[in-house]
Amino acid sequence: MKMGRGVEWAVHSCVNMAWTPAGEAVNSARLAEYYKLPAAYLNKQLQFLVRAGVLASVSGPRGGFHLARRPENITVLDIVLALEGPEPAFRCGAILGNVPEPDLQENFARTCLVSQTMRQAELAWRQALARQTIAGIADSMERRFPADKLKALTYLAVE
Image 1 (cartoon, one colour):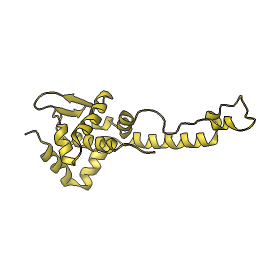
Image 2 (spheres, helix red, strand yellow):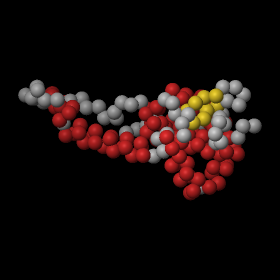
Image 3 (tube, rainbow, N blue to C red):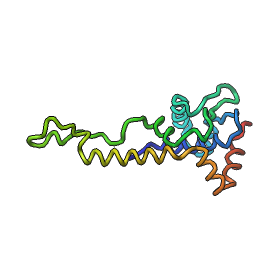
Image 4 (spheres, helix red, strand yellow):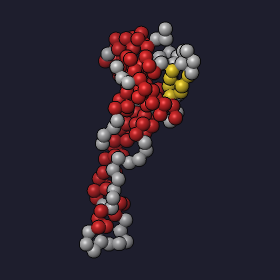
């Protein structure tokens, strides 16, 4: 499984927004500058999160983005699905139907042990991401690296 770089960027951005006081928007250009990321590409990822209901956007001179829901109600899976889409990582092509003399009544995508193995693994992966919330990550980061929250909030503060 390979995810785009935008997933990492979006999770970090959401953690920063979880630390931001309620109602205060984070400017995406400032966020991109903080992490030394391409601003247009980060903004595109944040727009995907807006469409998925993870973020809300605020226009105007103090505009930007903020969490649309409480951070304990936003999972890493929400972010991954918003950016990568809901399609399964493994797509069974039912190639068992191509072998000589296949059982034509068989639903190979359903009964194939390779397909079952891959679906079970993906289910476990999705369940693990669904258990991880932005609030949990933000709290853990703050405990392990207490200076990071203050540094981020100071840098990202609306001037």
